[in-house]
Amino acid sequence: MRSFNYSAIREQKWDSEILGLIAAIYKEAGKQELYLKQRPEELEKLVEIAKIQSTEASNAIEGIVTTNTRIRQLVEEKTTPKNQNEQEIAGYRDVLNVIHDSYDAIPITQNYILQLHKMLYSHMNNPIAGRTKTVQNYISATYPDGHVETLFTPLAPYETPEALDRICEEYNRVIGNMELEPLIAIPIFIHDFLCIHPFNDGNGRMSRLLTTLLLYRNGFYVGRYISLEAIIAKNKDLYYDALAASQVGWHEGREDVVPFVKYLLGTILAAYKDFQDRAALVEEKLSALEMVRRASKNKIGRFSKQDIRELCPTLSDSSIEGAFRKLVASGELKKEGNGKNTCYFRLN
Image 1: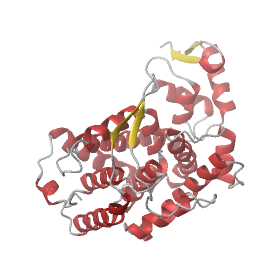
Image 2 (image 1 turned 135 degrees about the horizontal axis):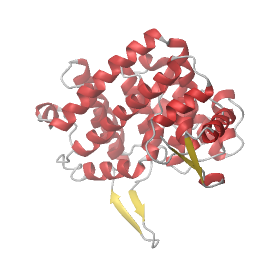
Image 3 (image 1 turned 90 degrees about the horizontal axis):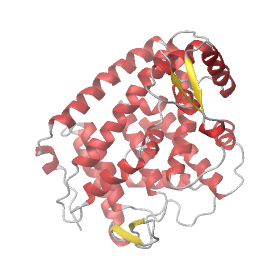
């Protein structure tokens, strides 16, 4: 089995793009801290929205879906799940809530990762919940003509428990001794986790939950207010491409982690930029019309109601639609299309 020693990574020289992303994230994290001190109550409105978006997006990446109304009911009201998809969504909600509330009391060990996995399936009778995989799994792609190709073969079931222990030990060592920048250690841990692929099911969702947990434990709280999962879902091809590029040679310990590190850092920075945009909109007591007007000024070219909803999460759909009508009537926006294909663009 490959060795999991981060010493070589510690010696690695990182390119200017990675160093630039890390510097930019620290700068944005500092700004966020300032916003949180000044406007804690207004920004608290973003938390529930982010939970809903994270739960919806992370499950949707795996094809687990339900209606917008049901997602809100499951996350906000903890209503009883009606089917398997909703059971899985409710489980994700529970894990996310525990991470939000108790991240500082969840050590990075195999035992805790298994407990979180068990919680992910707590609304269904799943015999493999909270246990590492019992059969070999494969990362494969299905092409338009129907043929399936194996892209990567993760570790065998018998190798998995030891490997999971090792990545936790190495991560805790380099973070505890301050041997490695946390924003480098986190993507490397998540990448190793995905290459081990420790579970029969739920690996992708667990990797995204662990990303949030690791970021919180290192003082990066952006995922509390902005859904990292929604950003990943929007560009999931980039996620899979970066993962595939970094998996080559992993078993022999000669993989190039740079594509995945850059991808995850870019995602974190994008979340911080989104936070800044949304914080600016909730900072002042603005009318719905003024919020939508300002949000539309952040958009170049055509945009949809969904684009504005993401920037104005505190507004209801009817408030956004009402503001659109006024902005179209006043000649500030032009409307195109109908129904789901409706979009808008600015006229000045």
